[in-house]
Amino acid sequence: MAGKRKVIITCAVTGAIHTPSMSPGLPVTPAEIAQAGIEAAEAGAAILHLHAREPETGKPSQDPDLFRELLPPIRERTNAVINLTTGGSPYMTVEERMRPAAEIVPEVASLNMGSMNFGLFPMLKRFKSFRHDWEVEHLEASRNLVFKNTYQDIETILEIGYGNGIRFEFECYDTAHLYNLAHYLDEGRVKPPLFVQTVFGIMGGIGAHPEDVLHMKRTADRLFGNAYVWSVLGAGRHQLEVAAQAAAMGGNIRVGLEDSLWAGPGRLAANSAEQVRLVREVLAGLSLEVATPDEARAMLSLKGADTLNL
Image (cartoon, rainbow, N blue to C red; front, side, top):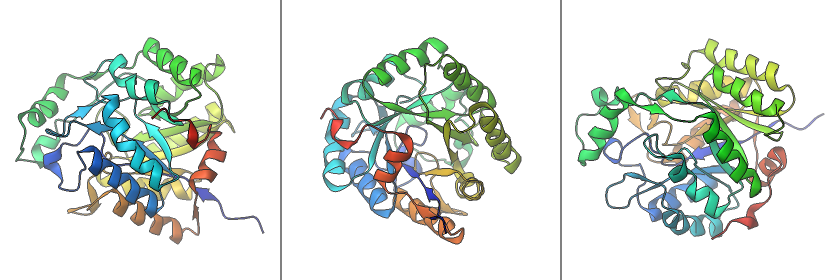
């Protein structure tokens, strides 16, 4: 009998979408982010997708020194694959967004595959009290925000990343992003196996209906065949329902407080590790096993853990 399929769990422990006032579980300081990452890895996450924040305000930051502060404890206490954002925040330039990955050269970096409207302002209806003025401004300004990821931006990130042995989590928020990635595959500018993270439920991207998940999977199958590894990210309340559907269809999963603050209807997650444990229950119900970090490295053809510039 063949062995059970192994599912890669990626955990995004803080991110730039949610603000500190939205959840007491959202880590802000480097020590808090490191501890959240360690707990998520101990819960079963093979890959940790990491952002940083300004310790005093919780504002998203791409200061490489903050990453150099939060990464050593994670590296000392876990074997998790390190995945650094190049998305940063939609308000940053691509040069700002690329600094941590360019300087620290992780095994994986995220790469958004197209420009898009990125609507965070509906959160103002759900959260009424904020500690910092920047939080309200951050959300309201997204009414007039285009998250810029031009072809030139994408090519710059690809060149810097591949030049340093970094592979990518290709974040695809809509069908056009899959076609953009297919363009670079046809040109030989991206390297299989492609780690394709299809994102559902962000305002400005594709929705989170089961038909949307099916559509993105069918499109990726047609464009990439056996040249990709599929993973899903369901935003907000859609996190676990999208994860369950994708897992049953052969996919991998991303969870974490960057993507959703919730652990059930109306119940905030204590931390990202709680969401990892919840999705593991889904996988267990489907008789699926969780991939270890080294199994994820083999599946994604990564360079190994000992190459970070810390």
